[in-house]
Amino acid sequence: MPSPLFRTAAALQPPAVFFPSTVPLGAPPAGSPTEALLADPRLWRAASLGGCSSPCVASGFAELDAQLPGGGWPTRSVCEILQAQGGMAEWRLLGPALRGLLQAPRPLPQPAGRKKPRSPAPALRPVLLINPPYAPHLPGLLAHGLSEQQLVWIAPPQAEQALWATEQAIKANAAAALLAWLPAARPEQIRRLQAAALACSAPVFLFRPLAVQAQSSAAPLRLRLAPGSHWRLEVQILKRRGPALDAPLQLPALPSALADVLATRLLQPASAPHKILETSQEPRPAATKWARTAVRSTEVSQ
Image (cartoon, rainbow, N blue to C red):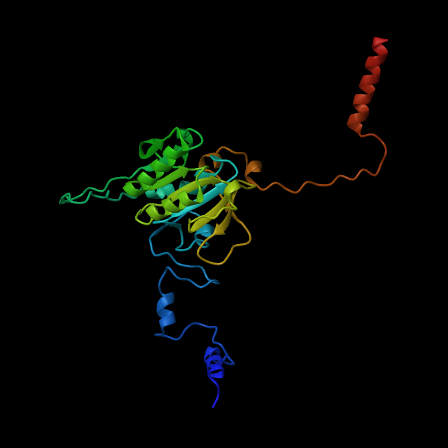
């Protein structure tokens, strides 16, 4: 009879694990629990682009929409955009989407407990600008199709008040879109704004400096924005529900007002500079001309 010590050691041994010779790597069989889980837009495979359970707003750039989960800017979440300096390129990136949002009337949310009217008239929601680095330039916004009557500019004097105004605007859910410049926000404050945005039907964009790129962020979508060459925008997707995107996107973003007044040579990509090889030690004609002029001037002065 084996001793109790051996029986205890045998009971502590892990169960045998058998590895099948072939592991299916394709799609799960129809009707399996795995297929039911993958049908949820909140789940996605690491090698494929995830979906979005809330409606999305087209960005106006087909190349960018193809790389965003859901095919556009998400709602019920925050989108964090990092750039070296605020006020450089955000209007060129968001202008097409904001123009479409302002042209689509939506009914405003009714307070709880209040009787709904029989025929609610849809109203145009405004775009909220919280703590922008510069005063909005109305002629430039009009060129993007944004009317000054549909813009609300909020300029809090302190960073804490800008955070409070952003959170209250998200909870109110009465704007077509919300743009907030929060350079000093901490990761836990971004997490709080993300939790509030889960009940907001409008896209929320948070603009922050490049210095916070190494910090963690609760934003499901995180981009890096910079002006590119040839009137393009360079957009690097840092975080999304899907695989990593190594190369940045080059989006054509020439304002229509400039396209009508710029010269043709400024609209075309600049050619590569030619390298000049000087094989002769003789001076160039222009240099010789100026040298002769200098000598003559010296002779006259003497």
